[in-house]
Amino acid sequence: MKLHIKVAFFIACLTLPLLGFGLYQNAKTFYTMSRGNYFFAHSRNNLQLKTIVIDFGNDNKITIEENNGLWRVKEADDYFASFAQTGSLLKFISDTVVYRADKLNENDIKEHLEKTIKIICKDTKGNVLESAAFAPKKDNNRYQYALLNDNSFLYQLKGNFAPSSVLMDWVQMPLLNIYEDSIKRIETNTFAVYRHFSDERLKSVENNELALYIGQLINNFRYLNAEDIKHITHFNPALFKKVKRYDITLFNGMIYDLEVYNKDNEYWLRIRLNHELTAPLATKRQIKERQILYDGWFFKINKDKGYVISSFSL
Image (cartoon, rainbow, N blue to C red; front, side, top):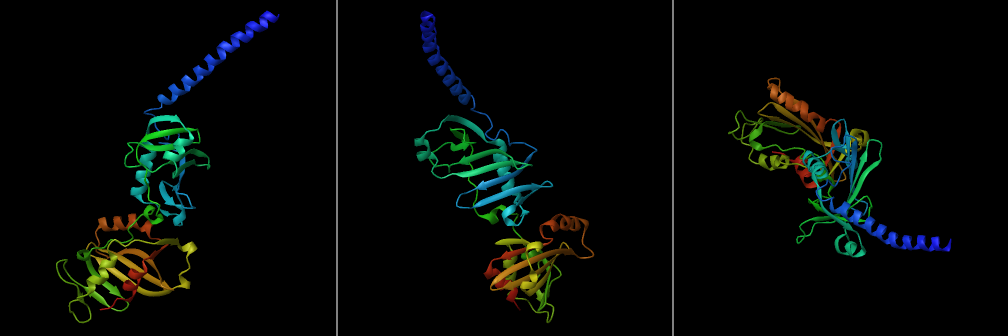
């Protein structure tokens, strides 16, 4: 009996180290074979992907949520996400592949992972599909270092995730991008200017003289961005003073109806789209497509631009 116990003990002592070595080799082989695999294996091309959270730390988060085929930014009162930024983010999630994966140790954390940006992908029920952390890619690094789902492995990725931490970079901008040669007429509650052809100078309706300084106003409508966005359900225009209104008619028949509100040196803009009776069908289709970006929304604009727009006169 004692002999049998000794034999069993001997066999165990012999096989356990081999078993442990085998498991180690299998794990090593598994993660070596991960090279070329997609990093976001459960999120990429997943029809259940509903929410993407980008966490920059220090309570700075940008949350993008899909709603009826359109992505919106939660922190911007659910305004529409930038088509370009969202497209780049989804492409990163879809296309990023693993170069290699190694067992994580403390030296890796100190050397590669002192500062990270997180991406958390969630499904339609709010369940986490994947949670990843990315270190900024250094100039001397060919690959980007990352963690995935707290699985204690350090990944090197073929890709570079370097998103903007500025909220307004993630919403669809600009609000306006009106070029001077596209303007046919501008009417306000204090003046009006017009011209018949784009190569003419704008003239005052009142005296038919050239509007020499109108360019100073129009420059503020070129690539105009917002600093904050609120939906009408969260914005009370009655608390502000309406200080200016513009009707800007373009040669293609489109009309921008702008209302400027002010309170305590804060300027908010409301934009509506309309068209001339003779506007072509292409313009009417364009208005229908763009209207969703303006209906019910108020946009806080730069106070210097807001002052010029609201106080300009001929």
